[in-house]
Structure formats: structure tokens, C-alpha cells
Length: 414
Image (cartoon, rainbow, N blue to C red; front, side, top):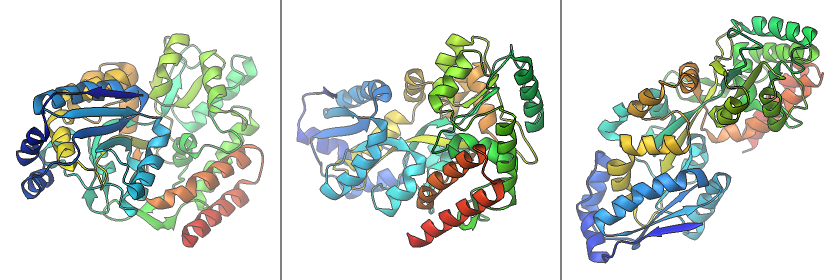
């Protein structure tokens, strides 16, 4: 679906905008003085169904104020990355697009996105959001939402948050024995596995994927899959499966239905499943995924607006990001359309009055940004399949060792 707003001025007005391009970012300021010529007469943004309306509303104001045409093109979120990568070859790219920070490895390596300096406004974002949009010494895009999973909890079955993984297992066994919950922990796995949703429990027993360098960057030479922590996490997963607290066959839809029907005490999921959960279990609370022998950590995903390298109106994009996107008004509107914790701290403080959102934000403080290095592409399939195999009864040590070897071999062959 295409939605277009036109404001009647012509290219001369557009050129004036570029020449006078205002910005809170040194990058944008330098670029505007160096290239005052207009690109295309239409400023184009690619967004998904949920975010099209609030982005269009701000772009309408921007277009009217500057005498340009603004077009927000709606497409499935899952299609945006592939379309931008393909468009980088064909030249069919927007001036801005929304995406996830963990796409950066692929996008930067292939020259698809251009750096964007948050400038002094970086202080207005959460630390994890700023960290997430940094790659190889440069910053890319404007983060607008932060997301992570946590433990949705039904107080009727679990009056208090589990104090530890052992406590969760102990409570789950009792719920199972008493017939109060046939699937105490709703954890989506499925035949391909789901390493993203497993990761909090995986990390709780010392598992990690890649190590970190002293500067906090990802060390792809340090492969954690197959090491002692990952094996301990797999052993714990198998224990839960043996006790029938989880099932290897559970998909995302089954996990959601099990919690919403009152048949699970806990559900590892993100804010996207909260509205339906509250409708079915109104007294739902959000707990941390409990710690085990180590601290439980969720992967943090950061939703971001990026400028393609080949954008025709890159200077207009910089102005729009600085003057319209990096504002409380815009961040509030994005949250209203899709209630994921804002990356903008002023907006996050407002919504943290909601105990559900606060629960996700608080647990996210001990999370880590999902690695954005291209090598993560080799991880998901092998680690997910290892999860499924272990939950189905295969040997944890052998399975995790083979998974680590497979990931390392794939990376070496790239």
C-alpha cells in the first residue's frame, strides 16, 4: 500500500531545504554544505504496516513545512532487508527504511547503509540502543524501540517470580504433579529450534555464543557453543524436557495458546504477545527469566531507521531524522502504534509507569545487544537445531560440540 502527501512546491524549494539542512549531527551539517543539490523530488520511506501511520504523520508535517512530496511505502517487515540489499544493486532504494540493528553486519559489509552520527542527541537514547547501532567504529541510523523477551507469569499458578532456574524447575514439577499445568513453561522450540527464545536460559547456565573483546565488540574467534557453559545449559534443558516442563514440539503459536489458556505458569516471550496475554490472563506479571549458575541475559533487539548508501535524498533524510524523528513526539507516536519499550529515554520513562513495560525494561538492563556481525548467520540454524535435538533426548555434550564445530566450519568457509 502506498500513501502519498504532496505539498505543492517544486525543486527550487527542495534545493533550498538541502542547502539550509539543519541538524544536531556533525555528519549531516558537513554533508549539507558540501552537496546543496536536490535529488529526487519525492522523499521515500519504507516501513511495515504497524509503523506506516505514525511515520507518515510526521513526514506529512515535514513535507508541508519544506514543500516536498513524502511517500511512505508499506511492506512486510520481513521483506525490507532483502529488498534494500537487492535495491543496492539495482538502484531501487528508499531514502530511509526501518530495520533491526542486527542486520548491520550484512548491510555494512555490503555497503548498503551509510553512517549517521547521533551527535549530542545520543545522550537522549538508552545506552544499549546507542551501543546496538554502532558497528566497526561508526554509528548507523536512529534507534527508536528496544525489545527483549522476559518471563510472562500467571500469578494464579506462580504467585511470585521464580527465584532461580532450580526454583522454576521445582515449582514446575509440583504444578505438573498436581495437574495444575500440563506445560508449566511455554518455551517455543519446534523442529528447527529457536535459539533466540532459549538464550536467556542458555546464558543462565553460563552459555554464550561469541566472546567479547576488551572494547565490548564481538570476538568471533571465541566460539562459546560447545564449551562447558553451553553443555550445562543443554543438560538443564534436557532435564526440563525429561520432567515434561517443556516440549520440543512446542511452536510459538502453541506456547502462546498454552499460556493464554491457563495451562502454563510461565511464557518466555516479548511485548508483542502481551496484549493477547492480558486479555486472557489479566493479572499477568512480567518476571526476569531466573538466574542459574550464571546471570540470565536476553538478547536485546533495537529497531532502527537507516539511510541507504544510494539514497537520492540523503541530506533530506538526515534533516528528517534530526528534526522530526529524534523528538519525544515521534517516539511517543511510534510507541502508541507498537508498544515496545522506546529507545528514547524520555519516552521510556513515561511508559515505565506501566508495570508490564517496566518489567521488560528492567530485565533488559541485564541483557546484551544481539550480535550484529555477519557470522551470526551461521549460528541460528545450528544452535536452534541443537536445542531441538537436546529437548528430544539426544546427548547434550555431543550435540553442543557438534553444533559448535558446524558453526565454526560455516564461518571459516565464508
